[in-house]
Length: 182
Image 1 (cartoon, rainbow, N blue to C red):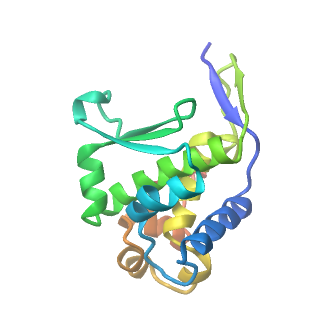
Image 2: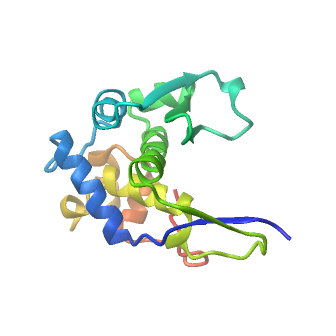
């Protein structure tokens, strides 16, 4: 038997509203491209005075881990190469930064509760903290009200996201899991 961690149910419409509020507070309501590095480095410390960002060497993290949000420490830790990639506009790395910011906002600022079951059961996406952070990141970087009517390649270019993220926000989902595919 495994352990399953799940969070308070949060619908995409709620996550979209949070993303839109963040964009509004940052002065980017009507801009397709959201400057995630500027937001994390300059706006988050203003919004959340105890927040800080740590850039860590690759060796700090286990293999295939790009970043983490340490709720108790009020910190986001990002792998250095991912941070540099995000600065350079690499869509996947920008999404990683937005994903960790999403965790921080949902877990620290909003105080979303975690629950644990020892059944190892499959949980619904809207109760999965990973899905919630991915969805918030996607809504932040690909604002629904601005991408309506755009094709996936246009979304990727205009929003600075990967092709996979753009395809998802264009309306494609992984039908097997109904979860984000980026």
